[in-house]
Length: 491
Image 1 (cartoon, rainbow, N blue to C red):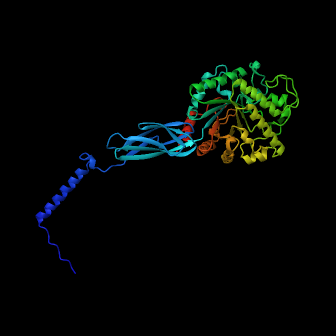
Image 2: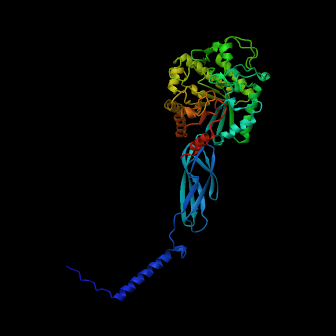
Image 3: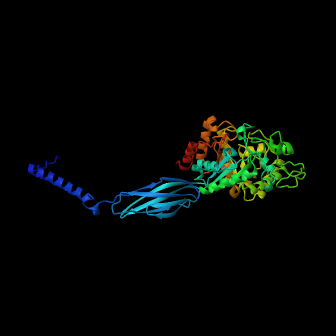
């Protein structure tokens, strides 16, 4: 059935209806305008922004966080801060500012809540907490122009690496004075005027520009200078020396002339299991000479203990897989034997007992744990004797694929509990003993080592790299700045 059409309104009535609608719309706009009536305005959510927008830090470090609030209508907003879990702790909060302490490794969040009358707003920032990071600067005396007056060069060296040292939980300077000659022949404090065979070689040969005399007096003064300047800049510094199984860095008369019975010349390695012949020389640990049949390994440890303690060192690096026979490659060693594994374990256990609280670091074989056992007889439980293990990845010896496999196997040691060593990743830019520089000779691999360290920064305990080239120059500052920013600040 068709509807009956509605009668049309008169034209004047239609004009009045349009005018009334316009007036009503205007009145509604005025009612909603906060300048006219704040009380009737619908509340808007506060906008909270945080600076910084995210935090990446190591355990124990603190960061100041500031909140900026916009959109409030009632007056000055109040801001509170809270952490999601125990990974981060809000230690202090004043107004819109809080101090956040990184407490445990992992990823967590901090929430900022702003309240302004009936209005409220929240935002969170991501907090990535790294393990306490150890920065290891592997350096040689070539960085010093004058052994008798080291302060200026020491200060410049530490300032150069400040982008990394300022954010590390600790810095370890490996002051590689020589090889092991200066440790094995050390005669004690009464002989500090003795000259030292120091790491002045380049490409395996002495260089005239470094034909300078160094004494034990100089070494002690250099160690004190590093401590003094680190304290002045609030850098937590430890100073280590190193020993090496061969003769790569300077000439070794003890191992190659006086007591070659301690050397396995097939592998150019100091064999810690062998026995010394008697001699009548003066040594710090044996002032009346070496007794016939003294263990080569135990003698080195005893000498190192006197040397480290007398000259003020905090620890020692066993360089180039010291304690094993062989070098670097999966087939360049004697293979596995229980007898050799037990001998290495005995040497490491003795090292740990004698050094006590002093640090012990191991420069590994560039290979994973399985290869180190099968090729070099390294005992599976031997890593527990070390405080630090370097997952070695220097470009001239290995490739980044083998290095990544090695690093992963060393990181797996962390499942061993409280005895597990701190695992250090490798960076590679320059070399103190050779004319090539990895940053130019192997640019892709050098950059890849940085990427691996950054990708694993939540799992590793720090990084190590050679800190001066064959002329004594440091790694270019632009590379240090760039890596520090990406390692600590990158999302």
